[in-house]
Image (cartoon, rainbow, N blue to C red; front, top):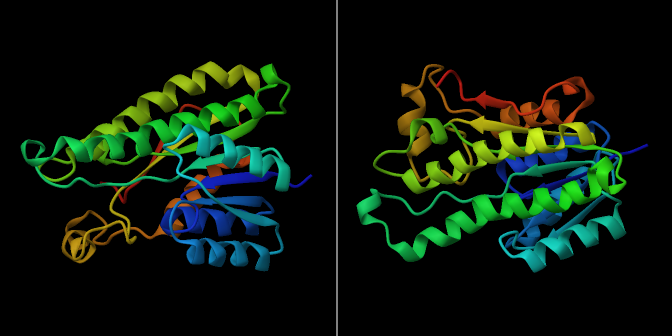
Length: 244
C-alpha cells in the first residue's frame, strides 16, 4: 500500500527536496505552503513526474483552523498521513536580543513552535493505535542553532528550535507504544533562500567541511528517519551540519 506523507513548508528548500525525494521512494505527498502557489505547483508537478499522487494545500500552520483544514483536505483527497515532516519555519527577527522588537517575536514562535505542535497533534490523532490508526513517523526540523544559541543574530530563532528539541523528545516517549516514531533533524548552514544575502558565501568556507550543506543532503536524512530502515529510531535528533 502506498503511504501518504504531509510536508509543511513543502514547496521550497528542504521541504521541496523532501517532497520530491519521498515521491521517488513511493510516497504520495500533501504539499503544504502559505504564500507561493506557483512554487507549490512546481513541487506537485515534480512529484507527479515521479509517478506519485500529490496535492497542494495553502494553510498557515500557526492558525489552528488552517491546520484542521489542511489535515481534513489531505484525508479526503489523498488519504490519512502515515508520515509528517514539520519543515515550515522562519528565522527572523535578526539582531541582538536587545534590538529585537517584541511585535516580531510572536510570529516566529507561533510558526516554529505552535505550528509544529498543532500539526503533530493532528497527525497523532490519525496515526496512533490508541485512536484506531496504524502508526506512522514524524520528523521535526530543528537546527544546530538550538545548541549554538545564535548569539548576535538569531537568539529567538535558536530558542524556538530548542523548544522543538524538547518537544520531539517528550512526544517520542508519549507515543512510542502507539506505533509512532518521532525524531528531529538539525541542519547546520544550508544553502537555501532562507539565508541572508551573502551568508552562505561568507560563512560556508569557515566551516569544518569548508562549505554549506545542500537541501537535498538534509532531505535524505529526513527520508531515512521516515523509512522502515529507521524502525527502532525514535526520540533522536540527527545533526546534518558538516561537523559543526
